[in-house]
Image (cartoon, rainbow, N blue to C red; front, side):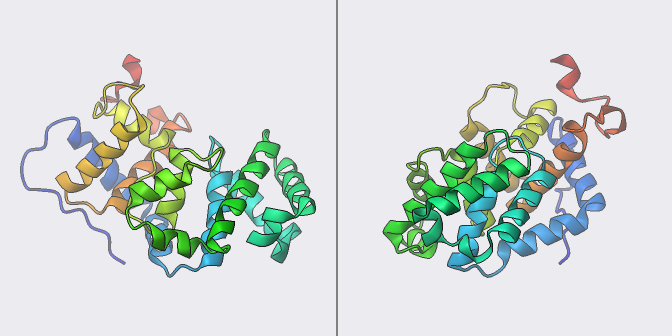
Length: 247
């Protein structure tokens, strides 16, 4: 897969020029990670994978390091294995206790609430005969899908969007990394802007520069993860123009 940026041949004003620098930097330095993520997002799905993907998105729902999320996710399958299916998770107290044990073992502070959320999602899919595909087929519009998912106690915009994105629906995930980049470049001026303001801006930028939404979202997220989250301001290509210093 070749990922190229089709940047219009005209003078680009700040703050958009800064953002394009970020995207180009990620494309050059994290190309394998971006390609791997996009291949995964576009790969064939199945009800089982969609369910397991929801578990992953729940584990990543708060500000937890990616390495911690992956370790906990892998541990669930190593310790619980095939018993981590929808029916068992929805009905078995023993499985619920084992999920809590694994999450606690992997350092989750609120392991009980995380486990309860996984149970709630499993019970939600009961009405679709334990089949996420039936849920996805019922509502074609991602906005309706997301609204329905938010009826599950504990599911917010980010987790709902994360799952829909990870099963291949082309929408962005607005997390702290995305917010930081859009704020520090000056594209979004109000730090307390609503989730939808950031989301609409990503859609707008994708159309403005004719950049695939997955590539745009991943490139910004990776840059924020590597530099903003790790406070590598002294190594950042935008050190001299970053608005973080003003805040």
